[in-house]
Length: 616
Image 1: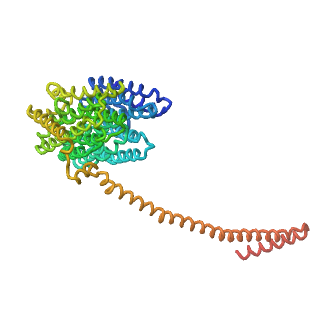
Image 2 (image 1 turned 180 degrees about the vertical axis):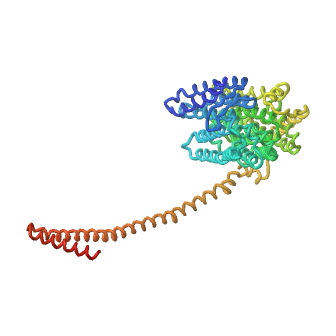
């Protein structure tokens, strides 16, 4: 079984890399290869979900690379691979032959493989590597149409925002190493840390998770991510990158609980995000922006569950949301391709003209609204029961967020089902490759409801392990379902004019609370100004100092060269002249006459004798 686990993560990563590298020459074959790979990965995911294999390989000294499938990661790998297969099958029709299909499908497989590695990682080093690959491939996918500068800017915004938050994971890993208490940086060892080290690890994990899952105050990057192709939005928003942070918090819930403060911070951030981003979704007039804001809000419920210790409810919410949100984004993409618009007023009657898309979108919207008998209705009650056990105020805020889910979902449905002035009720059928995944995801939105009720819920709870979770009462299911139906009906009957708010509030909400503007004002612009100041200091001070020093050095060298050359040349010439003079003097006694040599010898002996006498 360990070989199957290696194959599960290696298959999409390897095939995705090969497709991306091969490029345009294999565009023709890329869709079939990618869909086949996704289906094979789904089969492997189902196999390992039942067997729970664990593998380990050497990575760094004392820090092995570990992968494992347990209850939570088993449910996640099946969810990720199933949604990936559905999205890639839809993409066969959505990403036409004229596009760079090998690059698209290769990056999608790489993205999926990185998410599979993330959910099966058991140590921080492996998680960090997968986390980075996921961020890089999301940047490439959001900016897939890179010639459009607006899309490129959107990709950069998403990447830089999440990348800044990702530094929290490095902080957590560094603190775990510095503490000396976390062993091999395995997740289960993180709870062994104490004191300030434990708080640092917790803070780092929370920051990284909030950034990846677009929770407040990082939510704005998800709005910019809508510039990518619709299949990218469907995969990114449903079962992969955006839920990675929520998954990490659910996985490390014991660390949050141990900190004493982490759980409350996480729970309240999730609850406030669910409420505030629900209001943002209500204010949107663009369908993809509405769905993006709803993603932040729906993931807020998962984050709330992680903070409140309701791991079972958070997991059920994650799985149900993956089916509903991927379905909603795929239909939005189909309408964008067919009608060339995402604006809700321009989508009036879209569901009537495209009945298959309209019916399946209705299923997704009703599921997001929490209307029975769809899965998010029951899953949300399971996690809110855990919130109620923890804090009644959390339950109230979460319930208010659930009501807003019904409001924005009913608003979207109202527009797409409204009759138009010139009706055209003829169905424009989607290609078979697009209809099949829509139908499958719609069925999943209803079928997954059973997971929130005994005995299936009890089985899921046993698979996830941990302590028993609070169970919602029947009246809670009935109340939330009735409330969702009533709110949806009121919005449907009265129309969007019912949702009119004071203009300043509407503008603020429609612009995503101007979070990006705030981030640019408080962080980006000061950093850019500091960079400009440092660049100016470099140009005007450092560069001039270096250039002045260089010029001075050259002048000193020239002066030194001139002075030293004159001195050395004079000395050498003097020595040479002296040597020549000595040579001339030495040649004078060399006459060749014997009596002169005898006289010279006598003179030398006399001098020597005088010296000897004087020395004595």
